[in-house]
Image (cartoon, rainbow, N blue to C red; front, side, top):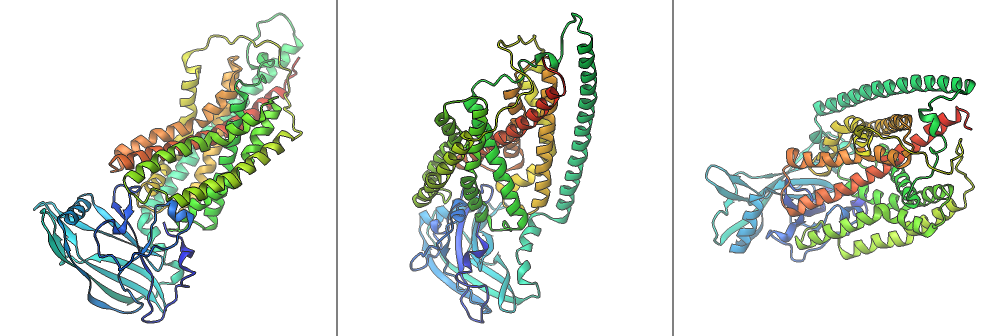
Length: 570
């Protein structure tokens, strides 16, 4: 939403009695549809003589904030009893727009000295089926010496106007202000927003869910590790015996496909592009967590998160170029340009197409979620002048890297035939098995994240989220290794793509959870909100798929190289 430092150029948050304190009106919209927001003065409130917009940072614009100076005069330390904002004869069209807003539970949001202020436009009287417009706003402001610490906006219950009928209505918009002294320190003034979002019992649920996840995960990974160790130990003993007694015996098991296990995958260029993009997204997630743990994304600094995502994504594109090109070189690829184009477009392409569609929808709705032309130009410039050059430089460095693909076994000239496999050994059932365990580890935390992104909750417990992220990475690596082993044990050597699909399958589970959240847990309605929710969640889940698929493959590669090094390959 609004960044903490954005007003510091105008003020250091210190005021003398009677000083004007900046109050900005931000946006209005249906409470249950967080993406569907409109400019404050799209509703026929009392506009100032000339509407002055505040200059905003990139992240604030991406968040749909459009701040304008409001007409309320809330000077520091000055009480007001019943100040008239304006008298107005609402036309039938204006009455209708207010009535529609009240029907849809519209809220408004403002910022006073960088503190968010909310309220509802009006209320519905369900018994008499009346729509009532609030005309008197009462501000309660708490201050500590020369600083504002807290503010609340309350609709005065004695001042509501009935707007149920289609006729002109005379209204007088008023406001009152009451200043109260408090000993709450200025530094902790944002704490209240964290507390209202997650009450102490929620925090207990969080820690309980984390401990529960940790125990489950460690038990399961320990169980898998023990089985794998014992099975591998038996395999090594068996294979070393086989070498000592070379009678004509039926060969079976993973040792006997050593001539095929390092056969390069089909669609090399795409394979390396997936690894490049996945590595970049993993780096992006790690940097975002570092910034979050340092405390950059405190409540209502949501603009900072969007800015960080854009900037860090641009700066990490060199990692994608290097990862993709160096691995492509190891696999003996030659079409560098195609490989880099694929790497650059694999995640950005779908994201850009989704953005174009959703921005068009937002423009049709005249919503503040539609990005202004200037912002789109800025993002395209970042992409052209930072992302693309870094991608190419990373690609050149990767192409010239000296690393070789060191396979412990030589690959045979002809591929060994894969024996017929039962249905549960096919790709889809294996993906379901692979995705279920990591998804169950993050399931409880997902609700809180969704409620924060697609609701009005504030998410601040990044330490818990970081622990969940680490658990997710470990479990994904372990489960993919286990499934790769079981795949090789039945002499199916096509593990390259399978390890990516199995690792990334958690992304598919998260997308499935989106449907549950939308239809069961949320009250979102309307075409715009639905398309925003599923459009952007599809992109996030695709990013998840690429990132965890890369983790799955990298873990499997280390494991496969390790077990084949331990046996003598002819």
